[in-house]
Length: 254
Ligand code: PEP
Image (cartoon, rainbow, N blue to C red; front, side, top):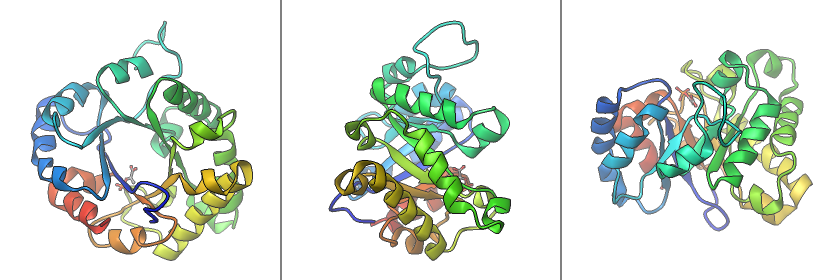
């Protein structure tokens, strides 16, 4: 991490876990993290939990995030949630293009781009996820895959918009598997992501973007990962549902 140029962010991705009542209680148990000043903390929760979590976190610095949004402002899109709806509930971040959304819900690089642009236009901060499969890593095409995902995700964005995105590097083989990328391997890809942004937008813009690592990050491996120069925090799945582990990860980002 490099706090001279960009924010350190630790974001929890609760996925499809916790009912609104459970979410309210769990969010309240994380309130001691409000004393943390060195890192921005976000809880990306199921859409239905947002009002309860917002209430629990009222008057704290902990931000609420969503896990998805639609790219249209409103209309005949049954079951979807729009950016203005999220903004109305004081949501700050939205995860876009998580590999589970790409894998199970047909999300493509094109919809990722449309959603990220809609989020920016509507005042949300997108956390754009990219990552390679095990097969792609084994075939030695990780950089090509990541470069294409980044290039398509940020299509038509202005430099000012790029400054408001966060990128999460989440190797698919590491998500929910207990297999974590080594700090060196994760740094190599995060550095490559920054170099890709630099090639499009120049050094000043590229150095202002927070790049997170995600994939079985836990209280034991968090520090070594976040000490890498181009890893500016974490997107945490499983461990974000355990108060002790999530707190320890936030503390490891100091
Ligand atoms: C995630 O879902 O974004 C994630 C990183 O999950 P986990 O930490 O459980 O691997």
